[in-house]
Structure formats: C-alpha cells, structure tokens
Image (cartoon, rainbow, N blue to C red):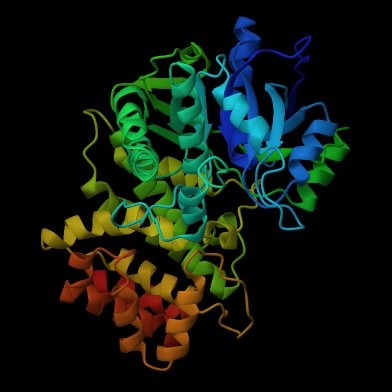
Length: 492
C-alpha cells in the first residue's frame, strides 16, 4: 500500500527562522518532516529553514537549489507499506565546506549573515559526534585539531560548527541582537550541554567577555532524535521511479520517528507538539535509553557482522543467534544502567527495537553504522559498562562488541578483503594493528589504553580487560559463529 502526501510549496519564500548546520539525509528525513507537518497544519511560514552543508560535498546543496528546494521522503513501515511525502520547508541551501579545488567556504559569509539576521531564532545541528571536536571521553575541546586551530587563528573565517556558532553569536552581540537558541540533534548524551561546552571553550580562546555572554545568555536545550535513515540505494530510486517520482534528492526512512526536546527556547519556537514533537523538562533518560539500547545494538551488529560479510541490519537480525545477542545485551547490560520515568517498559522497548530492525524494506548497511566508532562507543557502550563493572557486574556482550570493534578497525574482513575504516582515529588504529597485530594481548591492551575513547577506570578493570581479550581471540580464531557459541555457553 502506498500513501502519497503531496504538499504545495508555500507561495513566495517563507521567512527563515531556523538555520540548520548539517544538510544530510537524517535532517531531511527527520527535523524537516516535523517542520513541514507544522507548516501545513498551521500555515505559519515564520519557521522556514536555511540548511547548510559544512562537509566536503557541494553537490546536494546545488541539486536542492535546482529542484526549488523540494524533495521526497519515502517512509516504509515494511516492504509493502510506503508513505511518500514531498517536503518544501527548506527555503535555502548553503555550502560552507571545502570544495574540490581545496577552497573553503563558498557561501560562508551568506551563512554567517543568515545566522546574524534578526529573524533567525533557532539553530539546529546534525554534524555527527566528530563535528563538535570534543574528546569523546572527557568532553574537552580538541584545541590542537587542525580545524579548530584554524578557527582559533582566524575566528572570522570559521570552518567548524563550533566556530561558525561563535562567530555568528559574536556578530549578534556586537549588533545588540538577542542570541538564537542552539539545538543539537546529534546522538550524544547531554547533546545540548556538550554543544554548549564546545562553543564556550572555543569562545574563551577568542574573547573572555564573549564567552561569558554566551554562557549567560544562550540556551542550549538537549534533544533526543530517533528514526532509522539508511543511505539511498539504486533499488530505492527504482521503486520511486515506478511511482512516478524521479528525485535524485529523495531520502528513505522507516515509518517510526521520535523527537524529544527540552523546552528551553527564550526566543520562541514552533508550536510543534501537535505534530509529534515531545516537549519535556528533562531529555536525559530518553536520550540515554536510545543511545544504549538502539544505537548500542546497532553498533554490536555493525562490528560483529560487517567483517563476516553480513551487509545490512535486516540480514543480521534475521539470524537467531544475533537476535538473541541483542535481546540479552539490551535487557541484561543496557537496561539495568538506565533510570527511566515510572511506567517505562524497557522489555517492550527492546521488543519494539527488534521489530524495527527487522523492517525488510530498509537496507541499513552495517559499514555505514560502523563509521566513527571512536566517537560513538563511549556513550553507547562504555559509560554504562563502567557503571556495571564498578558494581561488580559483568558485561560479556559489550566485551564481545569491543573486541569486534578492535577487529573491525584492522580494515580487513574474514576473507582478507580490505575495506575503508571511516574514523577520525583511523591512522592510529592502523599503527596499532601494524605494531601489535600478531600479538592479541598487546593489541587489546593498546586499544584499551586509548583514554580518549575508553574510560581509564574501565580499562583498568582486570575482569573486563580479560573478557575483551578472550572475546577477541574467539572472534579471530573461531569467527562469529564460534564467538557467539562461546558467549552462549558462558551464560548457560
């Protein structure tokens, strides 16, 4: 069954009230959909979006311009049930990254002017964990990173999301304008607080008075976002073509979507609760639940499955042993670390996640999920594992997952074929594998010693370190089947 929702473009350009940093598939399939629902329900055009790409590709920016900023979102409940939406809430696309010739910031000044405009009241971000330039373990700004160092040296020509926010806020302060609210929509614990830390730490290196003004005046509410949005495939485009939609900018996602937002917007916000946005006083419990149960499960599948030739989440959860592993991980290792509001049924949540993972219409590639593990694993696995280990409780599923991540970072599958390791620390991983690849104990010890990824107290836990080493040996010597069988025997 296909439900097609065609939305007429608002006549003229609606006023831009939101600037978004991170023009990617998730933003277009999640926040933009909620905003489109709001616009169509209310007729309020004050919250149109200017969306900027800060990464290396200018193609999507120009393609959306050529399409009049229209694109389609295909929402699959399963392979037979599809809702097709046409989205028109994006009013402008900009490019502030580095182009193919190595030049920076084609539209940077336009972006900064848009951020400094009186009508801009909200800035949202989906720049991935690494886009905040924070140490994933400590939360400290990576001041020595070349991108951040460039923003410190030339703050009026920023390259990073924190740098763009600092320069835009400096311009607003200089003009006597109130600051915009900054809403992170990335999968990080306390994402608003971490965004605030990145911006304030960078501002401190520029101007103490500016930093103090940001700390005092700017709101950084936290949020939790949830929707599975895999990369588009040729099969996805082919199905849309069969429906009469030829849209190179289309995105695909599951039917399920959730957005939980801390209600702290001094300059106003859309009245979007009726459109499904959950406005709450404290996002943290929902955010941690999603990170540890959904995202943690995804990471388990990615690092265990991809080197074995398992391509997608659907393919992975179709295996009884991997499905059982996820349920055990969620209920025995993740759920006990959560402090949820009364009445939350975590077993039912686990069941709902397994059902979503089994959506046969989505080809969510494991290699896509595996990207940037060094930035994701602290909040998905390691912080919860530390709490359990400190309480004297074992985390065998997580130990297996960490062992699988170490194996994954070698960049070769079980048959010896190479694949790219997409991670900010990829060169360090390669060096460690080159030095210790023939000595499992030394290799595991070296990875556990990466204190910008693994909390030192967790690495120092002898039982945890031994569990990771045992799992690594099992994976490398017996493969996935043997490692899962060993884990099952250990719990019997």
